[in-house]
Length: 71
Image 1 (cartoon, helix red, strand yellow):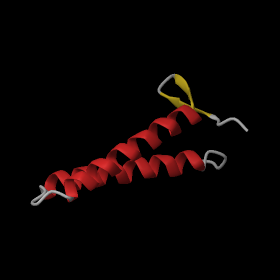
Image 2: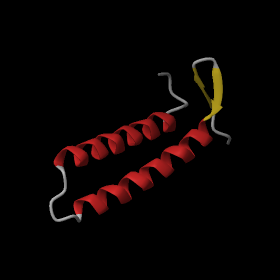
Image 3: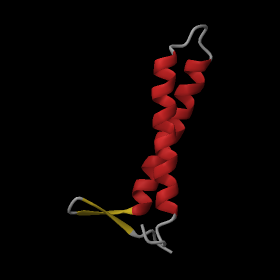
């Protein structure tokens, strides 16, 4: 079954296209976090920003997966 559209402002966007982009973001952020964490002395503020961004992407993905339910 096709993913329902998501309305952003006045534009209707395919939900599966958004999910694909979010998956790409998650992969990038996960890789970046691993690289930062492997540094000798990673900047805690930068780590927090990337973790917050990753958490946000997972929240969007969760919201998209609940597309059949009212929001």
